[in-house]
Amino acid sequence: MSERTFIVGTLVSHKPGVLHKVANMFRRRNFNIESISVGPTDERDLARMTMTLTGNEWMAKQLVKQLEKLLDVVATTVLDEKNSVLRELALIKVAAADSKARSAIIDWTNIFRGQVIDASPESLVIEITGTPDKIDAFIELARSVGLKEIARTGVTALERGSDTIDSEKDVT
Image 1 (tube, rainbow, N blue to C red):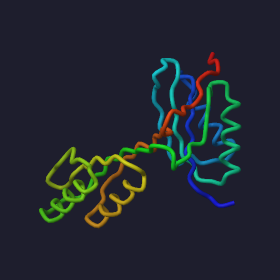
Image 2: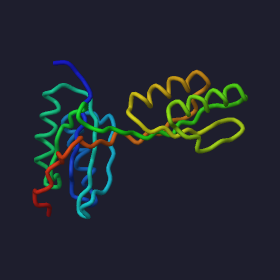
Image 3: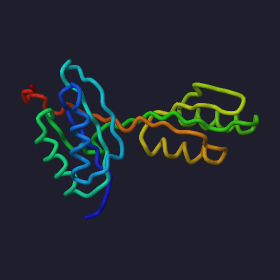
Image 4: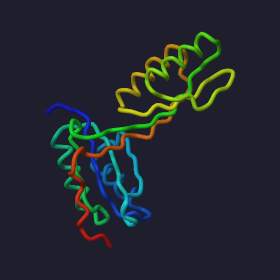
């Protein structure tokens, strides 16, 4: 089976220790979390986790089965990347020691629909939002002038259309 990236959306109880339980389940099964984003939902007692992992179809199915066994997991699904809206945020600090480099960075930022959110005489901090591929492309350009530091949020995603992760399961 070929390896690819899977995006897993999970609704969980919004209480202390749940992230630890989910991460520990990954560790016990020797799965690596490529990225994870967690935040509250419109329901006060629920949070949504969006995780990415690299593996094969079998691994993704095993992960869903194992997640659904955890008491604090309400629902989980592997999102279809082609039928989902994916976004990630990155803050990228780039060396900008001279006006030529600074001008190039600002031009690239505009092309990628990003924003310069901080400037100093030696560097610029750029905010880029988009798909992981878009962010990776900007980072590759930034390397040519001197990449200093990166902070990425990880992917967050929702399926297109009316489908949602089922939140009918009782959470205690």
